[in-house]
Image (cartoon, rainbow, N blue to C red):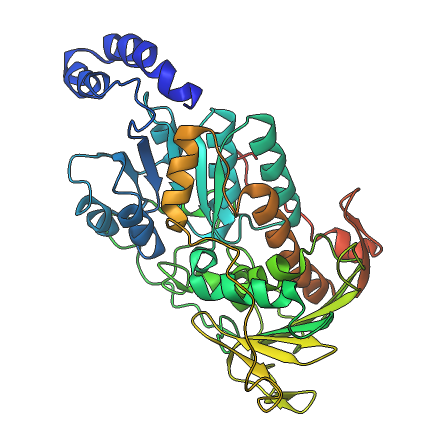
Amino acid sequence: MPSSLHRRQFLTTTTAGALGLAGMGYFSQLKAEESTSPNEKLNIGCIGVGGRGENNVRDVRHENIVALCDIDESRMGDGLKYSPDAKQFHDFRKMLEMPGIDAVTVSTADHTHAVAAAMALRMGKHVYCEKPISHTVYEARTLAKLAKENKRVTQLGTQIHAGDNYRRVVELIQSGAIGPVTEAHAVVHTIWGGPKKLKHAPLPKGIDWDLWIGPAQERQYDREYHPGGWRCWWAFGSGAAGDMGCHLLDLVHWSLDLKHPTKVAAFGPPVDPETAPRGLRTEYEFPASEKNPAVKVFWYDGEQIPKAIHGQKVGDFGILFVGEKGNLWATYTDHKLYPEEKYKDFTPPPQSIPASIGHHKEWTEACKTGGTTTCNFDYGGRLSENVLLGIVAYRSGEAFDWDATNLKTSSDVANRYLHKEYRKGWTL
């Protein structure tokens, strides 16, 4: 059982005294829930409870949700309907100081993922963080290191990883159904970018804008940023690749057991210093491994998606694996082998990857048993790094060789985009 659960009796007793009688009743309730059972429920705090955050609150409600945090008062109710008695916060830093929290979910805008997750890990809390794990490559590597050093259970929010279809595709690729794979192409029609005109509307009541900005450089509130448009802006997100890259490229990395690319290049319209493009194409080269040959991985989003690849028609959402014997096209929920005539009577390999108990449940159970997860920050951090390297290549305008060991590219310009300067008062 996690050490934080065993510490709870000490924490609740000492802190309740400091908070006075008003806090005593609340923390006594937590103390009453103490148990030596391995099935004891976790006390979870949720950072960001609107939008994707609401889904994460819902999906961990089988545990004790004791705290909810959001900078927008109007979105707090999205989380409260699943845990009406949870203590409410606007500042996640104050929430994390609340005694008795074992684990946290992080569902903020991308630019705040790393600072929230890093603080939680250093405080000994398990972390579930939305994708990508961070806003910069350096942050992703740092979080993976912190998770390992603090021996915490982590999970990247790539929920489709738990789906049966992804498991069947991995079995097909790894069984050699289409032969050795030399290329993989991920396609998504999503557009998060393009020139934007700021409206500079008054700040709505109930939003703590300074906390939303967090580690980013200070700027005036605008409806283009919050609640969802932040994905278009480099200051807060990474366009369609940041939004969808981990979901689709997850299947490629899992199937081919990919680690770090050796070369990265990206193409699209002229770079805008403020906003992501309306379409991006990224190319990665991965070295051969013990089980697989060298492979090229391609990412296409928005206005850069192709209608066909090597003569094979593709849809506007999915992954095409190109093998020496045939091709495989996969989406979230289905897959198909090509050429169809060749695979008409094909018998798939026996199922070898067991069904998931659920992406969130996998995390909460591992927190309680000391187990691990399929998208922990080692795997999920590496996946996020690779997605973000495509952004580095595009924004720098330079293709580069990647030295994953030393976290360095062959381009001085690209190296400047591996991390960013935080606003005063904020740190990783």
